[in-house]
Length: 337
Ligand code: P6P
Image (cartoon, rainbow, N blue to C red; front, side, top):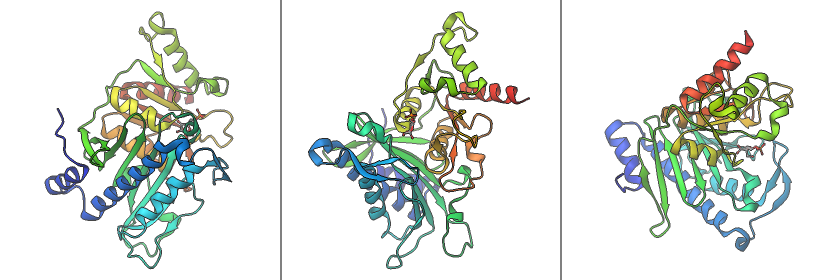
């Protein structure tokens, strides 16, 4: 039974025992957690809060923005800009970086987020979530520019997400394992419910959008065909499939019971990238998954080794149970020879 301690106590213990969390980073994480609580309140209101439906605008990705996308983005900006722990922020919903206004003290950290991942699920009451990633400004960097954000995922100081589902659960790593905190609505605080999360190295469950099959590269087709062949096929076991179309929800399932999640490059992507964004989707999820003993690649290389070229760059994603990710990656490397 995990000790029922608050997020604050957990972070202070991490700071005290491991020296893992500088004061400024602890403050940052607590502010992001409070912002997620506020987003959860808006999400949970649904129709009653006049927050469903589209906002009549598009984001930098060319995607129609939902009202809650914009609300969540504004909540994260307003919560984080005054604290003195950040130099700048970047969001899926904003083209450029957001510099902390001069009227507030500047900090050393950079915060990136997908304020509400899985927006297509908002209006149909399916789990969605907020994903965040924390970097430190490069030593000696003068001012702040987009270039300060273009660091590999291995440089992250912290990463996490908050899934707004049957429970509202914050999942966090600061590089010392993965912990999960469930929102206790009666006391209004996140309470530790899982510590030292571990992903089983093997699985019988894969997550992919099967409707894209005709666009897949051969190694993806090979892997999925083998899963579908079940125990009579080369894998010798039957597989189950899940696809929630909210990365946060699919990754949460994998952190909780194992599995492999794939959003591979497909022939619709001329520049051989993928659909998901490197900086505020793939990198934070890769950090969490690796810290839980899993693996995360772009089907060829470790995601957290990739050097970003652009803030909103996209990447193929294969993550989850270590042995499955290694198998999929090997199929891609074999086909490249
Ligand atoms: P598709 C949500 O829009 C998202 O970015 C991820 O959360 C999710 O895994 C994926 O896209 C779903 O994509 O093509 O199935 O709608």
